[in-house]
Amino acid sequence: MPGNVDDTVRELLLLMPRMVGRAKRIPVPEALSSLALAPRHLSLLALLLFDGPMSVNELAARLEVAPTTVSLLVGDLSRKGVLERREDERDRRRRIVRIAKAHEPAITAWLAPGAAAWRTALAPLAPEQRRLFVDTLLAYEAAVAEE
Image (cartoon, rainbow, N blue to C red; front, side, top):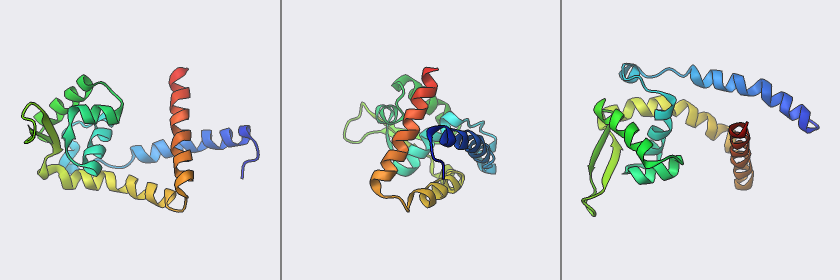
């Protein structure tokens, strides 16, 4: 177990490229391979898969990006048939976005290995430890973005 900050940094600098490399090797399902999906699509699809249909503004808030960015992504994925947009029955001005039924099994299969690995890693931790882990990753992301 690392004893000081530099030991931990060294260990993480060795670990992170392996993690990223393994994540990149998760194959895109054949049903989705011709759609040229990029990592930016993955977060959006994961939100819709785990949390269900929602509006562009809700997606933007959760992804922490501008609604126009999400609108462009949704438009791109809608043209490819991956997403469907429909009117909100309670407010006809709002559009609700969801994964098209035809692509849901392939997207689930694509995201399942990563979700299962995170569950395995996080399950033994107490809720406060899980929060600390996520907060640490967020702090790392912010620090890298500043450089």
